[in-house]
Length: 142
Image 1 (tube, helix red, strand yellow):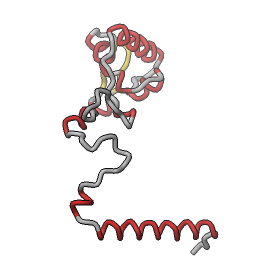
Image 2: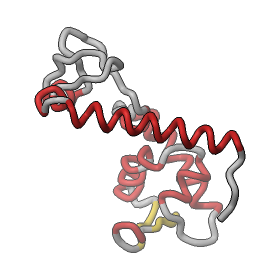
Image 3: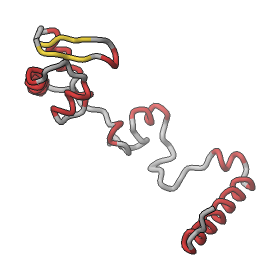
Image 4: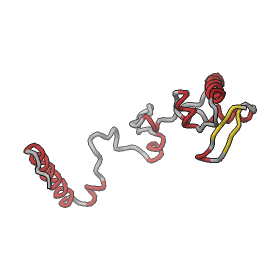
């Protein structure tokens, strides 16, 4: 077994003491206290379930998103969809083989979820062809 450095040993001991104190505190608390505990970092304890799903806090008009990946995107304008569609066509025309959505998104320098509407529109217009289904779907220019 490898020997710990003095710093690592000290940090390990402090961590053990800390965890022991937390476990003892939780064990001695009532179930109601533990179940009703709201961390001090919470914005508001009066958050409703519906408001939580929408990202709203009671009394606040502004939407709070802790995680930017979960933030909702607005619908693309027709101009933006057309612009993305042109990028997709350019990428697919330059490609020698069909490409998946992730590869197209990487080549376009944008998020793959932004490509769904433009890809659908290009298919409906007969400018690109879809190959495969679900995760194995690829696209090629016609």
